[in-house]
Image (cartoon, rainbow, N blue to C red; front, side, top):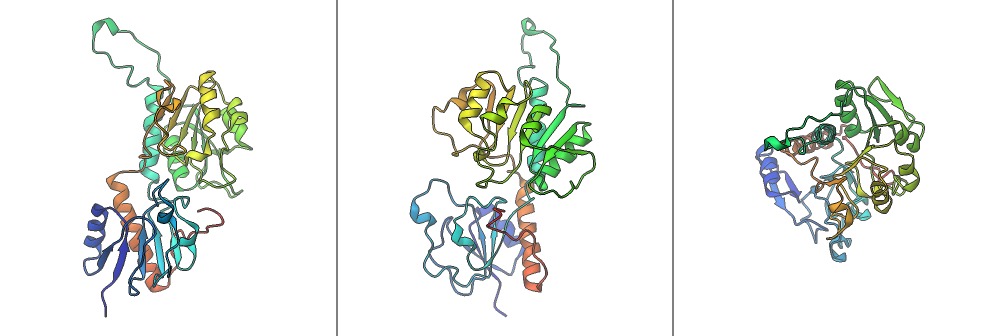
Length: 316
C-alpha cells in the first residue's frame, strides 16, 4: 500500500507536528498561494490562508485544479482569505473552533486591562501614589455578535465571572448556553451593553455592520472589541466615535486592511488598542489544528461525516 501523502502549506513547526502524528506519511511542502501543480497521487492539501494584497498570480486558478485532490483542509475558520476556485471540486473543511479558547482568553484579558486601568495603574515613584476607582466586570453586560464556537467560549467565561451576556446570531436557533439574553438588533445590543465583542464572519451582509448609526446608539464609555474580521467595522465611523467621546475604548485584533497603512490615525489614538491579528496564536492552537486535521482525515477515509465542511455561499 503506497504511503499517505499530504501536501502542506503550513509553517515548518506545524509540518513537524503533523509528521510526528503521521510518522509513516510523506509531507509535501507547498508554497502558500495557488499551487502551480501537485502530483496526481496527492489526495489531501492543508491550505494556508492566502496572503492579503498579494500579486494577482498568487490568487489565479492553476491549470489542472484540483489535480488529484479529494479533500482540502483550511488553516483558518474564515474563508475570506481564499479564492473562490478553491471550493470547486474537492470537499473543503475549515478550522472553525480551533482558536476559540485562546481568543476567549484574549477577550477577557483586554476587558480586565481596561476595567482595571492597566498598565497606567502601576506606580514606580511615591509621587504617583494615588488610589483610583476601578471598574468591576461582575454585573456588567457583555454583548457578543456571532455565537459560533468563539462566541460561545467567550460567553461561557463571561458568565463564570458573573457578567450578564446579551448576544445575537444569524439564525433563530436557541443559544447553546443558558443565561444568555437575545438582542433584537445590533443597535439595541450597543445601547444596553458595557462592552461588545464582534465574533462574526466576513460576508457581504456583515461588511460595515458597525457603522455610524450603530455607534451613535452605543452606551456611554462602551468598550468595542473586534476579534472577527476588520471589515465588520466602518473605520471612519469608528474614528469619529472615539473622537467625539462616544466610546470608552476600541480594541482591534483585526483591521481592514491588514495591516492598516502607516500613519493611520487609529494607531495613535489614545482610546484605541490594535494587536496584529494574533489573539488565536498559541501553542494550543497549533495542536488543535493538527488534532482537527487528523479527525477529519479519519472521517474521510472511513466515510464518516467530516467536521465543518465549508458552505461557500454561507461564507463559512
